[in-house]
Image (cartoon, rainbow, N blue to C red):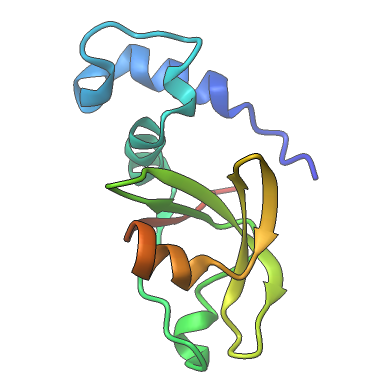
Length: 129
């Protein structure tokens, strides 16, 4: 799927024009890597996208309806990570995520697993079209 969005250009431009928001950049932008760093993406999305709930409640349709395909999820420390919400859901209606889980990108039922066992969700965003 092509969303016709050049995220690299958007993030690079925002860093250039608003570098003080991006503490990870440390006053020296690097267009080769800055747009791929999770903390920078979180800053950009928190300013430019729709912020949604970070809570995932299995079998709670009111909560889970907020988790839609193509939403972006940011997991924080100790292991910064980013994922896209899939259109697939498990038996409890919790969505799968699409993410780069070495050695290859994967689509799996790890939204709650990541949040509870690896790194907490600190951002759940939807692109403003």
